[in-house]
Amino acid sequence: MARTRRGRSVPLPGQLEPRGPEPERYGYVILGAGCAGLSLCHYLLERGVDAPILILDRKQAFADDRTWCFWDVEETPFSDRAIRRWNSWSVRAEGREVVHTSRRYPYLCLTGADFYESVLGKISTHGNVTIRLGEDVRFSKELDDGVLVVTSAGSYLAGLVFDGRGLPPDSAALEEARRKGTWISQQFLGLRLRSRRPAFDPDTCTLMDFSVDQGRGLRFAYVLPFDEHEALVENVYLSKTGAPPEAHRAELSGYLQDRYGLFGGDYEVHGEEWGDIPMTAHRFRRRTGTRTHVIGTLGGETRPSTGYTFLRVQRYCRELAASLTGADGDPEGVHPWRYGPLDRVFLRLLRERPERCPGIYARMFAGTPPDPLVRFLTEVSSPLDDAGLIGTLPKLPFLRLAAGEALDRVRESL
Ligand SMILES: Cc1cc2nc3c(=O)[nH]c(=O)nc-3n(C[C@H](O)[C@H](O)[C@H](O)COP(=O)(O)OP(=O)(O)OC[C@H]3O[C@@H](n4cnc5c(N)ncnc54)[C@H](O)[C@@H]3O)c2cc1C
Image 1 (cartoon, rainbow, N blue to C red):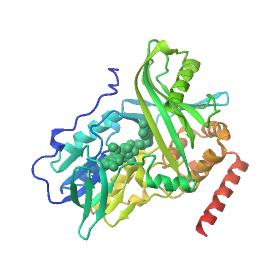
Image 2 (cartoon, rainbow, N blue to C red):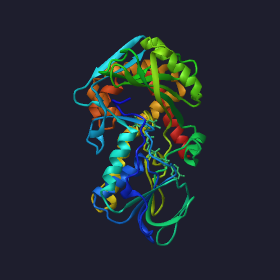
Image 3 (cartoon, rainbow, N blue to C red):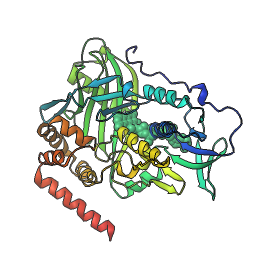
């Protein structure tokens, strides 16, 4: 796959490897060299932080492990590395296809490898960052004058700690969200493939294609066509149970046949992506101590109703870095509160009435012009945008869902 250079691993720049004597104390220790941990480090450095920063991760290397997409509603330090920008996207459901085009807000695609390469390159130009890979963080403990971080390989003292270790399926925070019943999983398997004949329309990506069998739970296909031959095609479940990887693969093979007429011998698979993103209204803790902040998915950055996380991570980390360095950053203000009730109602729809979702999404996409729709999906909409979108939703079912949500909240507060 020469064109998109997928699947390559990204070496750790030498300037970031452990070197010289270990400082007695780091100004900042970041747990997790993922999207949030690396982004926060970049924003801290951009704000002029020159105290020693240590980033710890249990992985051994930076792999091309995911593909991030987000709408280009604002500049991020990584947007210039996008490998593809689509101005048109489609939703297919109940026998119709809605295609939207926006010149103003393209949908950007950033590969995992390009993100890691870009952010590591930026961080490595500063002399005060060390990244230690292959170290599993066991625990951290707040002391009177700092935080002690204990890993599989040693211990470190920090002024401040940022926990960005993600949200694995067995995490305590996710267990709590599950117990309260306020979650479903966005589970997907994606194939990076190349077809032998032209099969894809490179101008339009497919956000949700519900024209697939819904027998196992709410399911759709997601297609990112890089050119006529090359695409990332994902099989996505929005449900509590999802499906085993082999079922995902079989369903993808069926989808490629039905939608594109591609049989097994017509394409080569160059890689796979797996994700299990919790979509939940659970309130994750932002602080677990006076000196310990929680960032990324572990801090609740995934939007409950969509699973989109990348832009929210950028916004939160940028503001957190500003607030920690004396500027007027407002990390708590980056996700406007008014999206909360709507997100909870959509999440309830996904949990309680999944069979109605394909029709409702198609109606919402068909009835809302592309720009207001994108602004809503990225939490930068105006009240007028929101009113227009809400106007496309079926009144009675949504009023019932909203009433159920309100009742649950009253019960919780008693
Ligand atoms: C395949 C995939 C595709 C996605 N696509 C999109 C998308 O298109 N758009 C979007 O908005 N969002 C997307 N997401 C969701 C979200 O943006 C990503 O999951 C994002 O990486 C979350 O950032 P994070 O920093 O919270 O976690 P991660 O990026 O997962 O980073 C967590 C890091 O912590 C490390 N770690 C965990 N436990 C320990 C430990 N005990 N000790 C040391 N290190 C530890 C991990 O190794 C990892 O490197 C996707 C997610 C996946 C999995």
